[in-house]
Image (tube, one colour):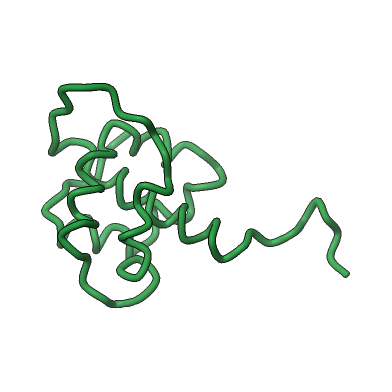
Amino acid sequence: MANPSHRSPSPRLLAAVLVAVLVLLSADRVHVAEAVTCAATELSSCLSAITSSAAPSALCCSKLREQRPCLCGYIKDPNLQQYVTSPNAKRVARTCGVTYPTC
């Protein structure tokens, strides 16, 4: 049995993190007129694109743009960083026309 302090994250948590990564990738392309709640789960529509070679959906790209102000925070979060900085997350951002942020 694995040590509880070294437990692997659940697939759902990983999916949420991957979605958050995509949001981070759109940080410099969208101007947000209202406050955005940073929530990695908002990027759940990007999960299949981040975890496979599937193209991102229009909803995924839209959510990435909405979460733009949160991307650097996701990149700096040790729990999200590996997903936000993954090659597939960067590919999804490029496909969505979102410039990857420099934080």
